[in-house]
Length: 315
Image (cartoon, rainbow, N blue to C red; front, top):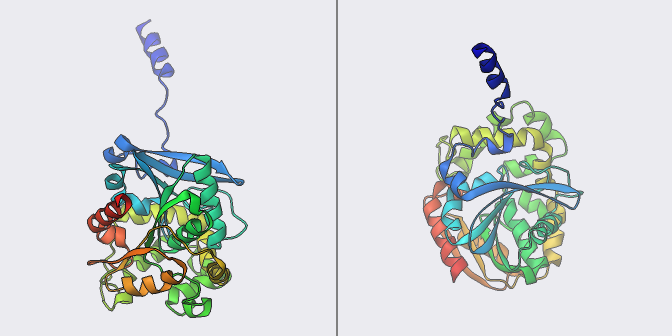
């Protein structure tokens, strides 16, 4: 009888819940579990993944390549102390699913706005990094009534100050990623290796900034996470670059952004980045070099980036 009871008890105990892929990177992080949660929303025929946490006025964070919402994680707890933070995966990237008709940044901005509208956000601040900065610019341009402030991080803005052909000449990877089908054919079986080799190149001591270091500012688990997502969305990531010609046209036609705008860039690059933004942003309130940081501002100097963003968002 006792053995039978034991068998019944064992059978009635539910098996442990399986970890969903999008939660694996955060499941054992007590800071995340205390404040943040993963969410999904269906908008424009797409299923968009985002992470939400904190309280206060809304701040929307938009990633670039080759990252996801997780690229903001080093500063999200600090921002969440004063703001409700929404860090999203762009359509068809990260753990967002569905493929938009175009990866031009104006179109992506409309999808992001569809998400913020679905969430009931009004007068949100929007902050973008890398190609996500161009999405954030387009969001502020197209939806001024819903934009409190624009944070623009480390991207020459394609447009009046720099055309697509010149833009592709800025770096080997921009030209390479812009080619149809070629980067997928080269990278598809070695996504993690490619990302692991790429990240150090545009770091503070990497070759893009005149250094020789091959040390990555990303930990192994971060690279694993980006390899997990880009392993299934590789083509969509490269489409961000293939849209450059349209991005230039859209920026040239864009309504100037009137929201207060803060430019942040790699050490020594802020004024140059500002020079590409200023023709289409009438209220640039600051252009800050991030000390000891290359392109990966958030990873290489999170304390500075968080402090300056908080100062800007509350000013």
